[in-house]
Image 1 (cartoon, one colour):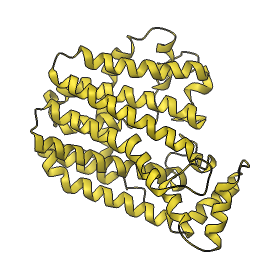
Image 2 (cartoon, one colour):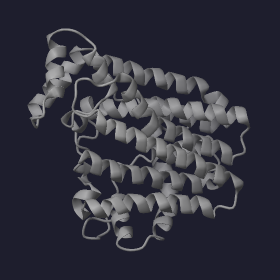
Image 3 (cartoon, one colour):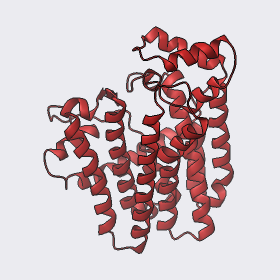
Amino acid sequence: MRTSQQITRDVIAFMEPALRETTALLGQPVRRMVEYHFGWIDAEGRPSTPVGFRRRPALVALLCAGSSAQAWDAVRTAAVAGTLMSAAGTVHDDIIDREMVRKGRPTVWTVFGVPAAIQVGVALHCLAFELLAQDPRPVSAVLARRAAYAIRECCSGQVRDLETEGSSRMSLELSLELLESTIALPTAGVCVAGALVRGAGEEEVAAAERFGYHAGMAMAFFDDWEGVWGTSRDALEDRFADLRRRKSRAFAAIALQSRGPARDQLAAFYDDTAEPTLDRLRHVADLIEECQGRSWLEERIREHIRLAQDILPQAVPDPVAQAELAAFVDAIADELP
């Protein structure tokens, strides 16, 4: 059986030709900007090697379809469409969050400007739906409707996220809803895509959806953890970005529910508007840990991994795909203490 790292490499190798072929349909200059986002060229248009991509939406879609070459070929279109939608969301998120670095290089908006980056995201979404519309199989219409719903919910979540930014009066409920709408539900959607394409019955489709939801929540919670306490992607992403923006996050909401001097210092930080120094951000991370926000977050990661593992046998009958999905989900927590 392949390790999680080997699965990721194989998914990238399988997806790359189809992804390049699809993005070649875009007109210039959007095509060049998309190629830059995917790491295929640098800002000057010279060929470059992509770094740091994990292709998680494609990976779960492919393995929910099965482990054979035939199964992967059948779900390739949906996996490419899901990857394009994920990329569109990332490009727009980077604008909203003023992220400067993504995958170890300047973000699209910092290189090409905000107006151009907005159009890149729109073009990627359009291209994804065009791809699904060109697929004559009836299942593609179902996937398009599900994808449209997921994107609409994601947009609502992003707006709510902006509304709660920069305040100690953050809501745990809204923070959890944000993770659901932006990561968990889209992950559930691509898992359903894999199940539907292989002709799964209603019970298997429902199980695939639940698996995707819990795997997505585990990934979402881990992304939050990685952004504060992780070190493996320091050279690829802007560490402490969410803390710097004082964004509403579930682990911070939990910490702010505690009592004592550490909680009061944490609340003062979230109500402040001054640009924090790196030392202050490190101190804030320590305060969150002291107020039990970190331990709560690590418990949630492990909980959703367990829930995903529990439903997996009902979601994916292929024993090889099932084992490899289990390895992938287990690996989410590899960096945790």
